[in-house]
Length: 250
Ligand code: AMP
Image (cartoon, rainbow, N blue to C red):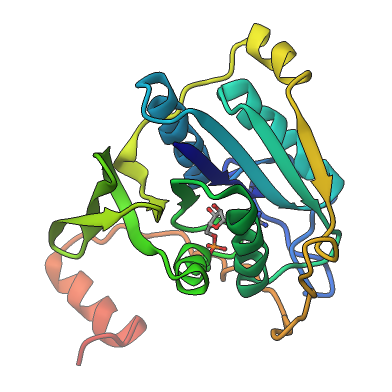
């Protein structure tokens, strides 16, 4: 069974986000970029399926600028077999990403397609669900366990108040939650080997998908600075401050 994994290049989660002076967008100048953490979990799961003999091939795909090939090479170093880069410098909305991924699913016919549950830059949490709708395939979102059987996959999902296990007919779409696995680090020899693994480049036009923007980003703002805390000497003083300063009780 072939496994397809969609990975996104985002700002590294350790980086403190800066906003451009005109509030038009996040400032990406000289900012460290990395693979979206939920996509790392998706790659890890696919590689584990290959190591268990369940997957025969792991293909990774990204949509983004030329620099996004770094994240594809990382995925190849982690154990993916080949990569597909759909190159564009435009901002691509979730629905367009899903349309492009549908074309890849149509071409590649993977048994399982794994995505992150969300990208930490836009926090959309939409692409996997949209891809499932466009392809008509079953979806198991927020997976904390994936168990591939004969013709089906059991997905344990993290839902409010507990876990739900669903059985999906293959081919299927899975999106990863944080507890699915702990991704490995790439080893230096594997990073070297990854440079020689196949990486194909296509444009959205070659896949017959037009990049239509339906959303306009109006402004981006940083959260309000938090005020420093104070210590109070007694419960009476606390109540007084809550009543008269913070005005949160009456
Ligand atoms: P989102 O719906 O934007 O929160 O993203 C959820 C998941 O969809 C990500 O973790 C990726 O697996 C996939 N995805 C989103 N954008 C892209 C992209 N530009 N290239 C490849 N995969 C993407």
